[in-house]
Image 1: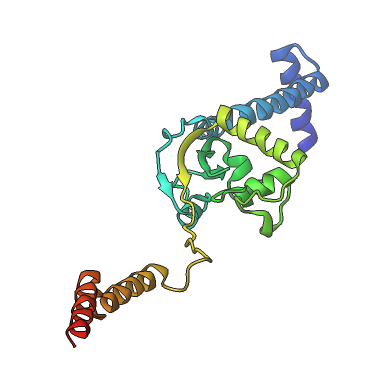
Image 2: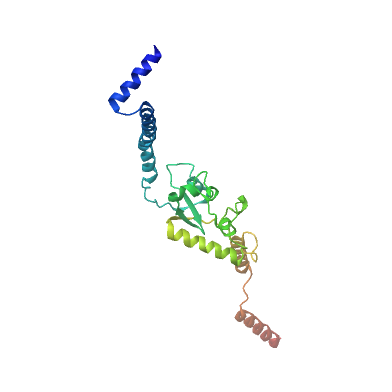
Amino acid sequence: MALELWETLKESITAYTGLSPATFFTVIAISLALYHVVSGFFGSSPQHHARSFEEMEPLPPPVQVGEISEDELKQYDGSDSKKPLLMAIKGQIYDVSQSRMFYGPGGPYALFAGKDASRALAKMSFEEKDLTGDVSGLGAFELEALQDWEYKFMSKYVKVGTVKTKEVPVTNGSEPSGSAEAVEATDKEAAKQTEDSPSENPAAVTEDTSATEAEKKDE
């Protein structure tokens, strides 16, 4: 039965297509392969275009944050996708959101985000101790490298603020503890002692001496 059906099918293929059964099935196989390739390409196209659209979606304009502290700067390290990605160099804060693939979470320079990483950039260091804006003690070559980084940031990113410097109390070693108050108290005490001491009037002393001499002459 099956053999009869196969013979009938071959005759039908030859009659209707003019092709031999082997050629017909070869054409069918090639057509199916092409269909899968083309459908796969166009089938994934909408997702691909959607992803590309998301990646190409323009970033919001940089927002000026003004003068903020180092602790406040840490809030912009990329952990919150709703906040811009900020980084500082030499106390100047830049919006590096456009380079999130480098400075954002998972990026090669992610540990620099949300910090003033001047020292680390100058030394090309990834150590925690160098993630600071303190550039004291750096050599000429390191300072030159830091300058190159600053030029790069200035030309590529928008400056949005500055890092608030820490206030260091100023003390004068030549003055004792509580210098202003102590000096003022000392001056007041000296003035009071001067007022309480008896005043020496030269005229009165001269008058008394003359009277004493006159009394001696009379005697």
